Length: 271
Image (tube, rainbow, N blue to C red; front, side, top):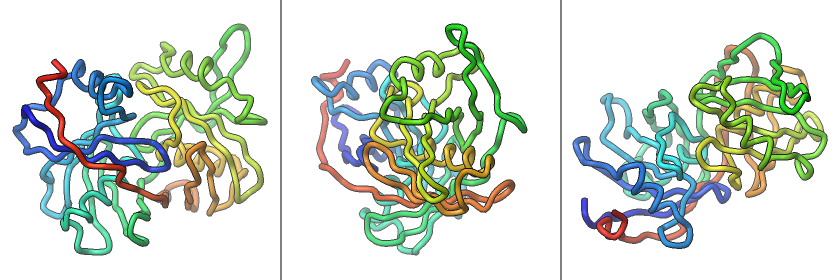
């Protein structure tokens, strides 16, 4: 895999290097992913998406996700939409819906329009029946811990503009309580149909958008009776539409996926 063809894609500014690989291909090391992710000397991305042959006959593909720090993670909501759109553009998604498998489990994608995809992200799983607390600098931090294929905590704030995303987000992401680290969402509820969100992503930092973060925020706020069954969550890169009836139900996320450019990279230059 000396010369590697890739597609640069994004979902609301959360950007990806998308590549196709065979099941037995040697993938870049963590060090090489970090070099490729560098926005000055590499391609630049929040995550790399590797599209592989499906593990099950009824799936369109299996995909893996590598963060900008080189670590592999379980799920990526904006990434799911980009994988689905990439498959459509490659002529590998003839049906209006397709099933995809990932380390975080199976998801179902439905094409609302070219470049607009709805994804069934599965059933949110809460770590506890109540909100939890952590003490940081003698202050109690209240949060909801929830998994939507990957781990998240969601903090409610009065203003996302003033939220300490880069500082508190970094400390919570790597707190010893979270053995595999966690994604940290700062949620401001505007009204039952609208909310704002900023996310400090595990292994990346703050991104323009986080699809699983929006799903986790929807689940958290809905559980507390703060959002309706259908709501729009605005992130710095744009808005996602979320739909969740409540406990035990599948959570749906709808948003865009776009191609920025296609290219080829000589991996030997990133040793």
